[in-house]
Image (cartoon, rainbow, N blue to C red; front, top):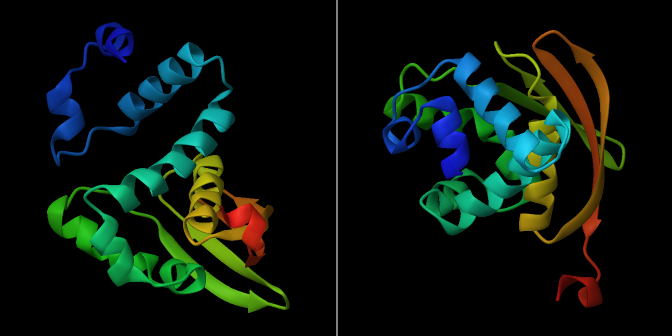
Length: 164
């Protein structure tokens, strides 16, 4: 991480403040980190999404996540409410919007954002949430347009032997 900080001329203040930095810097950080880890940008974004859920759950956002939903469907259905709280702390944040609807044995999650290109991170976040709630499942991106995507998520309780 220190190498990336030096390469991009950033430091701790850019990372811990509630100030929003522009997307160009976010993209540069992602590119440098993916390169350092020998991953493609989509692979890196997916891993960040999965990691973020674990970080949030075990760190400062655990209580917020509990308040947002006690199961996968409930939490995803309340993501917009959670993001409203984020904009209270960081008014300049450009938060996405989510919808959820039942689709047979699955749910379809709609993602809308002023930003483009974050779909792999959203898939990672969804995978991280499945893991967080002890669920097995499949995530399939079924639609995409500039600034929006839809994911079909089929999930089930993890078998007791797999949960350990």
